[in-house]
Length: 152
Image 1 (tube, rainbow, N blue to C red):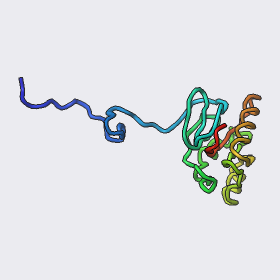
Image 2: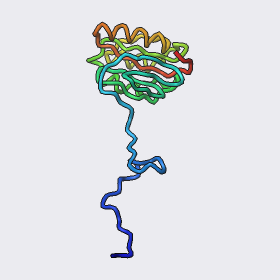
Image 3: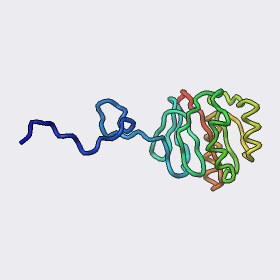
Image 4: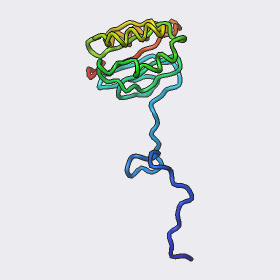
């Protein structure tokens, strides 16, 4: 018998359990590996594929990703880097710009054109409805959706 406390053989690095009191919790970037319609939106988030996500999302041919953009001024070409990376697989991108459908800045729009991305700008609700219809047709659509507070 020993008086010394035994050390665990492996202690996960702190970034794997950032929530105090929850050792072993692993926080990963939001990602759904597939294509799915958006079932609902509002309260600052979205529901899809029997899951929910608070914040913006990018619905791309490779999957649905959490997106750091929350307001129209956040929609920049840097934040649309995943869209540009998948440009060849995207027939049409819907930019859901919140409640108003305000346009992103001129530089962002031009950079999307230069990357070969065709896009439509509208409110988040209109973008979701149009995205869902065209997705159901089996076409290669994508959506960059800002969250809204209004429950739908």
